[in-house]
Each structure stands twice: as C-alpha cells, then as structure tokens.
Length: 443
Image (cartoon, rainbow, N blue to C red; front, side, top):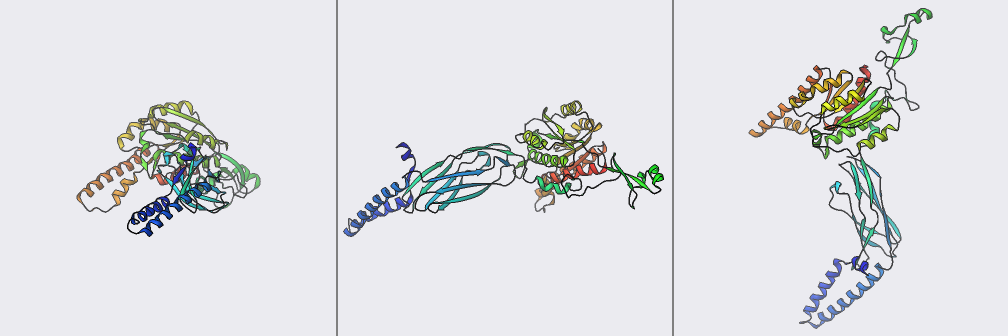
C-alpha cells in the first residue's frame, strides 16, 4: 500500500477539471443550472479518476532498459539510448527522467514520449564527458499517464550502472593516415623505404637514378659489373616514452578539458602510431615525484595497458619536481630513447629553473619538450583595440607570447627540441614531430 501511494500522482488535468467544477458550483448559487452541471462534472471527475487509477495500476505494464557503453571516451560525443516497452492496451504519454552522473554537470535530462499500445519506443541521446574516471548512472524514472490524463503512475526502472571514462579513443584511427608511409602490417599497403636515414641494413639492389651515391656498394658493383647500392629501412623497436606532467601547471582549462586531458589524449594517439611503426611505446607521469613508469613495449596489448594507466589520472596541485624526473629516467630508462615531455611553462623564469634537468634528460636521450600556447592570449593579440585598456591588455599579451617563442629558442640552443602548440593541435603536432625525428634518423 505504501508503494502504491508513493507512485501515484494527480495530473494537472485533474486540477483543471476540479477548479472548473468549483467555479460552476459557485455560480450555482445564482443560477441553479450551473450547480447541476458542476455536480455532474465533479461526479465524472471522481469516476474518471477511479477508472484511470484502475487501468494504470493493474499490474506492471511498462518496462525498459538503458544502453550505454561500459567505456566512454573523454571529450567526445558518446551515444546512449533508452528502450521503453508499453504493454498497456492503450497509448501512454510518459515523461522520462535520467539520473546522470554529477560529473556531466546536467541538472536534468528529460524526454516526453508517446508510446503506442503493445509497442516499443527507443530514445537516443548524446553525452560528452569532460573528466576521466568512474561515472555512476542512476535509475530511469518514468511518469506515465493514460489518454484520460487524470492520474500519473511513477515507474522506476533499475538501470543503475557504473561506467569508466577513458582518454579519448574514438578518434584514434584518424591519426593513422598521418602514419601511412610507415604502416606496413596490413595487406595491400606498400612498404616505403627511406634510404640513407638509418643504420638498419635491408638489402643490396640495382642502382637507379635518384639513389644516394654515398651508399654505392663498390664490391658488389665489381662482382655484378654494374652499380649496386645498399638499401636501409627505418630502424625499428626503438623506445619512445611519453612523459606527462600532472602538476598544477597542467590544470589550466581549455574548452572544458584541462591541459592534462589534452596531453593524455595526445599520448594515447601517438602511442598507437608508435606501435604501428613497430617501435616501443611507454608512459611515465610525475608531479612532486614520479608516480608511475610503464615500460616501453611494442606488443598490441600495450595499448590497453596505457589506457588503464592514464584513464583515472588527476592533476595534483603541487609544483612538479623535474629533479626527481631526471633521476628516475636516468635510473629506469637505460637505453637511448625518444622522450616526449608534455608540460607547460608560463614564463621564461619557470623554464630556466628546470633547464638543468632538461639538459640532463637530453644528454643520453632525444628530448622533445611539448608545451602550450595560451589561445586566449593569442585572441587578445589579434583582436581590434577600441579603448585604452585594450592596448594595455594587448601589450601584456604580446610580451607573454614573445616569452613562449623565446623559450623555444632557448631550448634549441641547448640541443633540446620543442613543440609549441595550441591544445587543439597538440596531437597532430606531436605525431608530426615524432615522424620527423624518425625520418631524420635522429634517434
């Protein structure tokens, strides 16, 4: 009985009819006919309410389910759907309320749906998470009414579930196009050879116009009585580590995501490209200390491991300790590797404090420092100035932007490569840098 009273509500149609009957009864004191009509309307309202309640609460007639992927992609559009099944012999009008995770920032997600008798209705909607981690979905609430629309029955569908929001994986495949010159594991793709840029010997072949004359094999040419050249391919199984700064400098937001989120998404995409190139991909993240080192590997099972390491990584509000990073890299990474360091420096002094450790990292490895332009500053620089304060803001912005460019020159002066990029272009620019280093044979 308690459950019955908790699930029954009166619709606004009931109150409209009740108020109308009240007005007719009030006018009935002056005009007897209105009194009779008011009593008749009040009786019909009572009878209709009883009949409506009887049909709505005669067994459980509505069921449904929610379909949501157990793993969602952070910062991307993820499709979800609801299925509502009506086994009543009449059409129902329903308002559906979804109990969504608080991380989505949606106070209410409501749908108004009419479902035909003995039929099924599907409702699709999109979710765009902006944080990684575990998301708890609650139940689905249905407020159902019949064509009489006097009484509303509440259904609570047991659709509660927990899903994990991983770094963006939906768009990983789009970056494979940038890698097509190196990707050779699928049938039908041509193997592209890059002559003269690496030390891994492949074969001796006939000289053709355009081959590098520095690689002519004179002994083989003498035996064949024609010019022969050594052919090389890109060296494989080289180690590439993504070093992710999870300190307070990476908490800065951009279009709903933090810089740390962009760094994680980029690390995930470039790791897939690295593995497709038959190199070894590894991950390290640090703040006041080195929290985790995932050893480099080229196995296809490495990608799920990288996902599991990064999906719940949060920013710590500490200043990152590059001294401990240098010590751990020197101790743990023994072979010469390509280190892609995702961090952010807001001014020259911040970069110079860490420069001795960056030089130490670059001594035995190829170090690429990847940091961010402030897109809001760039907008101020390129926006028209109308007032005196606008000129002041623009001059300050130009000074900050100039410091970022000076950081690039300072790093290059010490033999450290760098990528200064917008968060939106981070993944593309990082992959370009990796492919450039492979093409030039620097590693």
